[in-house]
Image 1: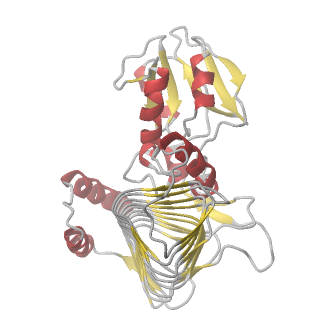
Image 2 (image 1 turned 120 degrees about the vertical axis):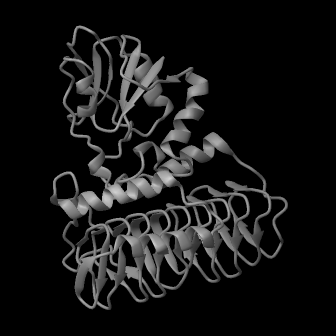
Length: 390
C-alpha cells in the first residue's frame, strides 16, 4: 500500500480538479510546534510520528510516496494521525473512493479518480492530534504503546543496588549513570535511553521516557506521563508534560500539563499554573482560529515554542501559549498569548531583533557541539519576515 501524507488537506487540491472530503485539520492547529517542522516529526511518547510509521511499515508493507502523482492505490493521510496497528488495519481495508472520519473530521481517504467519496466512521480508538493539548494528553498512553513496540519487559540487572526499583516494566540502556534513585513502574513503563544521567535523590514514576543524554537533577520529582527529549535537563517537579530536545528545565519549580519545544530554557524558579482558581475550563490561543478556544480541560498548562527562553522566576498562567524564538524576562505573569520573536521585559513587549537572536542561536548550538543547519536559518528568517509583515 502506498501512503501520501498531507499537513493540510487543502494542500492536495491543486494537484487536480477533484473534490476532496473536507476536514478541520490544518497544520496551524499545532502551532507553535509545527512552525518549522512537520507534524510527523513531533514526538508523542517515545517515538516521533515518523518513527512510528516506519516501524509499522515493515509489518504492513507500506510505501511512503511524495510528489503530485495520485492513483487509486494511494491512501492519503493527514499528518496528525498517531499510527497504530488498529489504524493500519482500518486503512488496509479501505477501497478506492472511501474516506475515514472521526467526530466529523476526515483524516484518511483512498484516492479515486472519479472524485466521489463514501464516508465511513472510524474507530474511536484511533488517536488524532487535533490541538496542542493533545501532545501532553496522549503522551502517557503512547509511552506505553511505544514501550511495548520497542522494549517489552527488560530486567535491569546491571542497575546499582543503591537504586530502588518498583515493578518490572523497565528498559535501561547502556551507559546510564544512576545512583540512589527511586523508579516506580507500577503505574506505567519507564524507558531510559542511552547516556542518561539521573542524580541522587530523584523520584521517577512511569509512564516516563528519558531521551538520549538527558539529565535529571538531584531531588527531581517526575510524576509520570512525561516525555523528555535528548540532551535535555530536568529538575524540580514535572508531571503530564513533554519537553523537547536540547531543552532545559533544570531548577526547582513546577511544570505540569504542558509542552516545551526544542532548544528552550526555563530559568530557575519558573513555574506554571495548570488549574484555574474558579475551577472553570481552560482557554488557549489557537493559531488556526486566530482566537482563543475552550479546551474543555480543567487542567492545562503552558505551551512554549522552540528556541524560547524564560528568565528566572517566570510565572505562566493556565493555558499560556508562547511562540518560537522569544525572550521572556518579566517578574509577573506573562500574557496568555505571546507571539513569536517577542522580547518581553518589564511589562513591555517588543520585536526580538533577528540578528541578535541569531547570534544567540549560533552560540547555543556551539555550546551543544551541534551544527546550525542552513535550512533552519532560512526558515527562521522567512518566518520572522512573515511575522513582521503581518
